[in-house]
Length: 189
Image 1: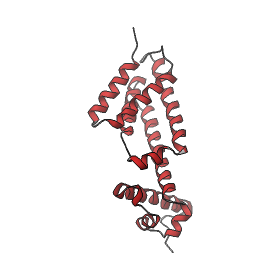
Image 2: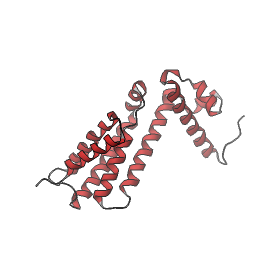
Image 3: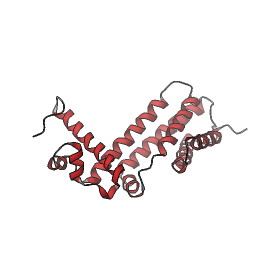
Image 4: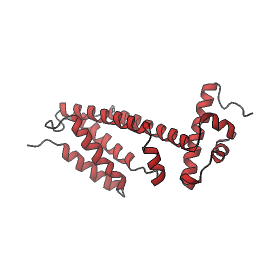
């Protein structure tokens, strides 16, 4: 029987779960989606396969949980940037740049298709849209960006335009895309 990794059962469970998520992600990165089994994940995690099945029903469930954790971390990172120092325009630029760079991450064809059809993605997109809308409304109220288009519509514009960063080959190209999006947010005289 494996010894407890931490002082409490709850913390131990969380650590085992996180270790399984990390192991699965690493194995998929090394071998691709089709080359990963529950036995390999259990072995890399350092637990028995039966224990792993107490946490997850299959490899797909592990990868979906990993992706949900990653997405939540990205939303938290964007919220921290949005609440950071600077005026609304500076914070907006920082959030747009961070979102564009985060959007560059790609999990590969089959894995990406599986992860992005999951229910947590729709909820995350909704939260991201609301966060972006509120930040744009703050920037509009401060006179930093245009007010002739609603913050809700501008959020759609920003998020869709910056999703193209996933197809760009360099950080410099992402920077040019962010500049182009910011130019579209400027006042029209």
